[in-house]
Image (cartoon, rainbow, N blue to C red; front, side, top):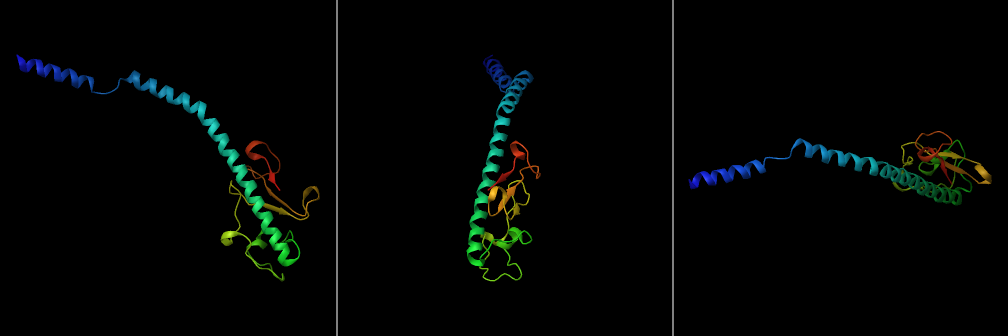
Length: 149
């Protein structure tokens, strides 16, 4: 009789340890879905802001490299040479002492698009360096906004 009692106790413990019910799993999944719905958009907005900040930092690096180029060559690269002149010596340019960017290659913007260079620049500046944002098209809002010096 003692053995039956022990077996019954073990069976009760076994039944309790079998797992979760379907209702419990559905409640947990619903809670996780609600949290993802609340937190997900905020995380994505922060990611977009980080990309914009990264593009601004890279543009400032380009500005410094262009100033070094101007000190060595005596002028900024023309539109035909563009930013490539910072990593490869343009033909017919004397005094080039580059590459002027670390790594010896021209980086792309955080969205994988090339930066755009214009001389003379916008608003009376000597030059403009522009990232057109995620859509790689002029103007836009949010992730698609233009970032320039």
